[in-house]
Amino acid sequence: MFHCRLSVPKLAFILLIHLCASSATLAQTPDSGGVNLSAGPNDIRELETFLDGFFPQTMEELHVPGAVFVLVRNGEIFFKKGYGFANLETRKLVDPDKTIFRIASVSKLITVTAVMQLHERGLVNLNDDVNDYLERFEIPATFPQPITFAHLITHTAGFDDNRIGLATQNEEDLLPLGDFLAEALPPRVRPPGREYSYSRHGIALAGYLVEVVSGQTFSDYVERNILQPLGMTRSTFRFPRNFTSDLAMGYSYRHRAYDAVPYYYFQTGPEAAFNTTATDMAAFMIAQLHGGVFEDGRILAEATVRFMQARHFAHDTRLPGLAYGFYERFENGERALQHGGHIPGFVSRLILLPEKDIGLFMACNNDRFKLLSTVTERFFDHYFSVGDSTAVQSTGAGKVRDLSRFSGFYRTNEYSRSSIEKIFSLRKQFRISVTDEGNLLVRGKQLWTPVGPLIFRNAVTGELSVFKEAGQGKVDRWYRKRFAFEKLRFYETLSFHLAVFGSAALVFLLGCLVWLGGNRMRIMNLKIRAAATERRLLRLTGVMSSVNLLFLSGLTFLFLSHDRIDEFTFGIPPFVIALLTLPLLSIALTFAAMVLVVKYWKSSATRVGVYFVALILTSLLFLVELNYWNLVGFRF
Image 1 (cartoon, rainbow, N blue to C red):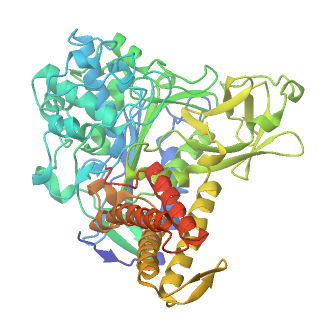
Image 2: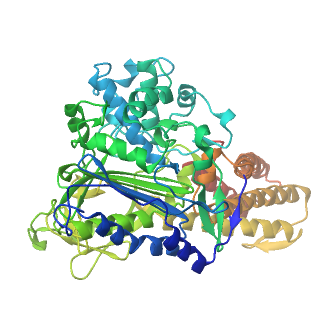
């Protein structure tokens, strides 16, 4: 993998951004005058001044080389502007008309639009079992309920989470979409329609179904049915060969320097592979806001657009839910529809305000979402009056009985249960505790006050969250926004598994020291003499302990040295494959030690003490622990 490291002095960087911000386009609009906080931006100059007031400074603080912003209103582009550099090496500036960004998961909106077209044309029914359309492979009937198109495009199909092998560094290694999904579709882990859980494979499957139904490749279908009608001439799900000089370079910032992130290719193209410009995305947003029409092109009927943008799933009616493709967002009294994207080197966000006829698209070439979050928050705070359309009146904390039942450790339901990635779910745990004042404290800093039996409000933002009971008053879920969090049992918590791994490490360390310590020593009042049988057992358990300790060391390194597991996107690294051979070796050594202990015990040839038995039992329990985390065998 090629890395280009470029240091940019802070002063020069921010001056260049201020002085050379590229291609600000000021569209003509009938609105004029000052800012109307209830109706969004009405003055182009004011909007540019507002954005320039924090965009360059925030980019410098977050080490974002380049960014783009476009706002559409009343069926036309109201404002668009590029900031900073599309490429630091060539010093090419961001141009909203020309610079092509990788928009990652915002790609899913294009895919869902394609599905809605097939629905509108009567070629599919969104409530149909997708197995009725699949021929290359079939989704197992793990649960009685079938998976439908509607489940796929609301992330409620119930697939496991698996990121291994989602992309390749070489275009020639790309598999046909159907071949990849036939091999790599994750197992089903919950009944469809029960909970939201972000599914890359689910949207990729929706894209494959577009291929199956239309008889065209997914890229060709999108080109003919969405991009051409909207005039999105600089957009593609393929590598943009005709515009390579305009493709923004993605960057990460480490050790006070920029690392260029090379272009790579998604096996799950329909969910993440779209390349586009801000101007092209403006056309897509206008079509979504204006009944499927942009200029002379139509991609959906007006009724289909309304149906697509309506709420189709929510964990609770008082929380934001999901439309088809879009997520609901309630900000300062406004219902917005949005989607974000994030891959190494790029982030993006698209937001629609259908009631205000406003759409925003932003992207930048560093994977720091904070910039786009800052823009979003300041935009809503600046242009829309404060309110909360999801507000409920407090029914009094006195009606919330036994707050202790909400306390405990939780984790997101978005984690792998079937692959070696499961071990990384330990990072996703957090604690909810009860304060002396009768509130809940989340992650040690977020204060939530009770407003009903299972409803809590964030004391700062006013956001609502809801708990779910599993029966007999026991809480097993926490729903916040569209996300679902599972309450953990004691044996699922990080502290429990750290205790298991730590205790095993101490026993294995003792086993190594005893083996290396010589032929004569006392352990737990057992004198091990230098007889051949004892030496064999001592050597066998010593090697077994060494193998287990070596694996624990490698696992610790893997867990602590990888802030993300993005490299798993390209498959399992050789280091991890080598590491996974050690538990298999430990099984053989543990079994051999068990046979030897039983043999010597029966023959009474030697006194077998608790030391060897404890060591073997520890190894067995350790292997059970590894199997729980999918670390025995090659499960990926």
